[in-house]
Amino acid sequence: MKKLLIPIMIIAITIAFYEQSGDDKNVYIMIIAVVVFMFGMMRLSAKTPSKNQEKKNDDV
Image (cartoon, rainbow, N blue to C red; front, side, top):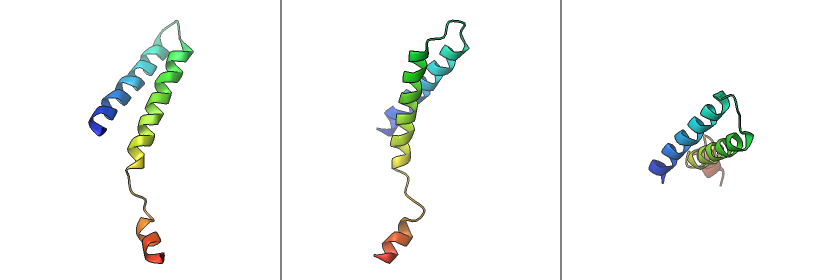
């Protein structure tokens, strides 16, 4: 899943930057691209363990 998610995020942010640089800006395409990028970042960061995870396990 991670191998598929990273290229999709790169493509989405590239589309957002390309759309922003043009004279005729389409806001909806930029919003969709940013939402796809943020969703991908959320999915990738969800797999990162918390700093306080060891402390929580000791308290239980």
